[in-house]
Image (tube, rainbow, N blue to C red; front, side, top):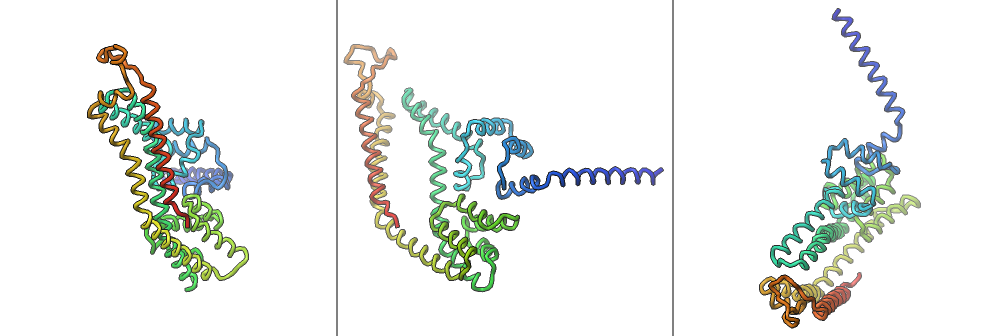
Length: 338
């Protein structure tokens, strides 16, 4: 009896494995693309239903899953996912929009607690909407600057590895081991993508999409041209590395010379706004006379009625426009392209 039971179990397991093998083999390239998509993104256009299925298997919360569905249907996260990847933020598009909503509520609530009126909480909603995006932009610029500062040394390291007999993949792997982040992370991902079967051109295009650097674009173009027509890649990379290092040196000298102008632009632009908000928080009646004049019309202010003063709003609008124009002009003057 025990022998027949063992035979029956083995037969059932064999049939199950055989059936599973047939199902997997019939899936073919789609299953491979889905597995590779977890690391390098989909190799072809994947339907939204497949994306929803993968996220459901990953186990997100119901709120995140619902928000992801709304974002996909309305196209709100078309470019945001790329921006989050460039900023190296490990959050989804739905989580970013959820944080944006929380930021709007917190800033508006803070404005209502401090000032108590309805105008500044509305302005707080607008400011809270843009704060997460401003943070993402700041992280993108910092990460791009750090990558560009490391790129010259990384290219020289690749050139030395090629001169020592390494292949291009081995030279990039040595860069991912020796160089600090963020360059190590990006080159390591390129090596992983090529190891998973992605061709070199697509892997480098993915790198350029994550790191939109003109210097990196020059390096990738040189590598693609060398793979097409041949040539001494180590010598080409060494020249490119020297050019990038000289450009970074010149940019550093320019930043030192223009640092005072940049700082002056921030102070001159932010000081009037900050001073006005502080005075309004300390004495609302004093600042409120510029935009609300009820005494001249014999209306009781304590009754809760507010009389708008168009001239005051026009003055504030012109002042903000002048501040924005001056700040833009200063930034254009000190922004010298090398």
